[in-house]
Length: 282
Image 1 (cartoon, rainbow, N blue to C red):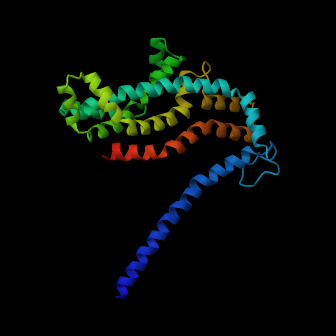
Image 2 (cartoon, one colour):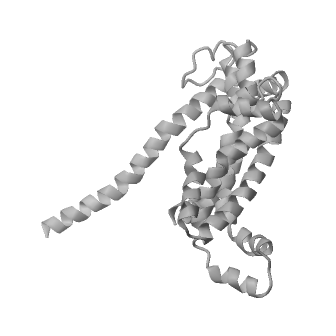
Image 3 (cartoon, helix red, strand yellow):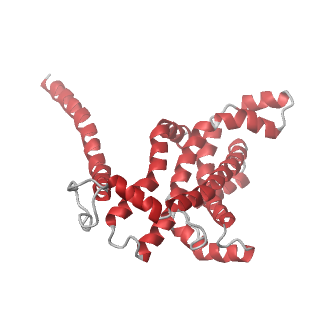
């Protein structure tokens, strides 16, 4: 009897300790860095020279927002980010979902090899030098079209990986019934498959938007100096001296740059989780 009581106590203790440990870990890993960014962005230049957890003597958050928005050319950089992100995401979702539909419905050794090759981009990073040389040969170096092509090639594997697993859970009888009624493959995909893919496509959309929105490495080599995106613009103005030692402006810029995706993630977090569990797990 005592052993049973002790077991129940350990069980209840574990149920309390596990969520408590998870909350504390989230506070340490996410809350503290976010707090440092917020309070540093709210200080003046002198108070922000050494970023720390202390509250500012006077809050200058909105003043710093106004400064970086006007002096940092954020509006043009925002337009550049949208210009390359929207076509990249739409293109990779359309091509990736169509490819995943074929790979998920047909089984053969050749297609298994194609699928393994298609998702290999998740773990094999592209070579920057090769990309730049290829774009120069095609005449697309330094252009938005070239940057869109790079992003589509990089993240097509992500869409195929998520969507293929989800396609395999869709009953094939739905497609067969549509074909009996005379529907073409394109119509079957657009009217039956694509609407069912919306949860997993929402997940892929958020993840790819996050990758592209925060990318500075590939943008620097492909369109650096010819087209501004938000992270590339922040890198340029911070390294050129405009924001040198102005940590309050740099952190204010980071907050403004992160707000669109942060709001989108908060609104769509349930769809993201459902898409991951229904696609990648299944």
